[in-house]
Image (cartoon, helix red, strand yellow):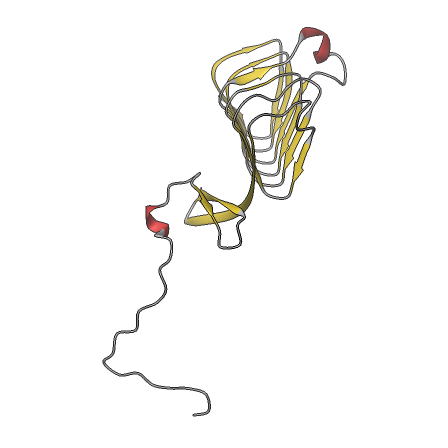
Length: 166
């Protein structure tokens, strides 16, 4: 037995690790290399994504294009774009902006485009690779592969889904 050792009746303690069972979906932790990672609950498991976090998106930040999950803690101003290959979460309002996610989009405040923008390339455009969730949607073009959930109201918007709209 070259390079192997047998341990009999001896407890071997490993290094401390994250208690994965205690992590809720959406929990963010600091990885050992200083990068942020985001835990996403999926059916029969969990997915870990790289994470980019911004207080808002506007003139001070510019557009965001990130290979992983994106969390915006405030609003996305008109004329700006947010792209994440994973989930995109916006805690505030997405104005006449373009938001694209490879997976789910969560817009907790809602989507507030403008009437003039709906007929032009400068309106609110939301594209989700999976499902899109929003509190409200007005003056927007929304596409989602799986489905669209709007908690309150939809006003003067185009919603397109391959499966369902609620």
